[in-house]
Length: 595
Ligand code: TEU
Ligand code: CA
Image 1 (spheres, rainbow, N blue to C red):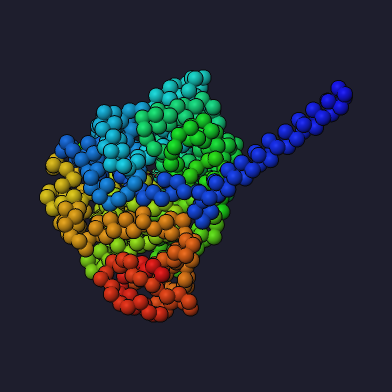
Image 2 (cartoon, rainbow, N blue to C red):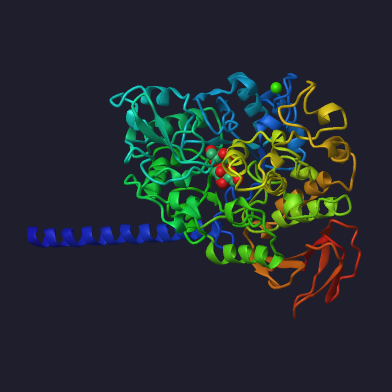
């Protein structure tokens, strides 16, 4: 009996386990089905996928105290203006204490607000103002390097056995010279000899931006602690500065000529990069509802899923620089680009990044010339139309769109004339390295900068037609205001129904009402077309057609078989042409149809 009992009991236990397993599987199945049910076209909807991001460069946004330098109170005073666009996330370029060797991308104290920008109370007021308007804030995480005035480095350079020595990368001279031939992004060697200990320290950017040694676990835990400091204050995420560069091949072999031609690629994707980002995710990011976007210099499209794949537990999205740097050849030289080249990039993105690897879409930031001057036509005739066309494209392509302050107004590049007009350390260092050494003529150097320089994006925001475009009540803005502010400014555009600002408002509204523009499939209808960029976004039965004329001339577009335009939803011109098989578009005309 007992035996029987035990076998029956044994049997019963087995059955019970089987039942539990079935129920679990069912629930799991059901759970999975429920999870899948939440998917849209295979995408797991999240707030940062359907976000529209507005980048603020605080030094140039709005000055509130007349010292000619933008500040946090200035940003708070313009939150209604930003909310008016319908954007849902603000990305704030660095606001931390800094000696500004690289305008804040050289941080001296990660838990202190830059004196020029205000106080921590000003930051809290700004953050509260953003949240009150149902927007979110992501801040800039600059932890590949610090300022050389950061206490960690001040300590580190004191002696070879200082407890902070290993926070940075020190190497002894090789045959009396730099440890290897690594160049800095800002001209010259990436190694700086420090007389105190007679050793070199590594700085991929400026001499005043020594690289942190991420192989030191103390460094990583310090970084995770400062991230938590800001997340606990209610910040909604990070834009991570040159994050692919944090892990170095610490044997520092000399770079080959091929590597020297693309040092971003040579320095990126080091041996522990993924390991450290996964650790950061485990230790910090996974504990908060955050948005993370990596500035992925040196990372190819093919490598992107390894950084953003939703099973990788690293980042939500990254910036690939293939589109925004289409106008750059070797050595930062300007190059002409073609529309098929641009379209090919978006086609590759659509092919390479599936529903598990989210993307970003952007044509401007604080490191690049103005979008309308680079990808549109900034002459008086076509500036407004082409600015609106770019807005249409960015808000209907796949990926989270990022706009840079002033894009909504169609602000243009600045007419730089001489080296004295520039502030950027990248420009000043390269001037010494290229012009003063006679390698490049001053005229060619300045001419190239007029189309490529970062300072084109850093001229003060143009608020109105008063002195200094209303950016400051002071006499001298930190960087000259673009003289075209009398024609291009927010005050005028807010009351002009045909302005780029008002058009962006409408386009953002349309995107937020149209899941197909976020989660829909993308198809380029005519990749080789030299003037027309036409594509569809399809989500289930919903199909949208976007047609953009990227040229100074009217152009016809014959719709491929089976594609009927449908109803015109919006156009940057009062296009009333009846929808037919062939569309006649004016120069820089943009249209969005719904089938
Ligand atoms: O930029 C890295 C980067 O991509 C730029 O250096 C770019 O290659 C170059 O400037 C193009 O002209 C990040 C920040 O966005 C930039 O502002 C900082 O200067 C840099 O890192 C160092 O922090
Ligand atoms: Ca100020």
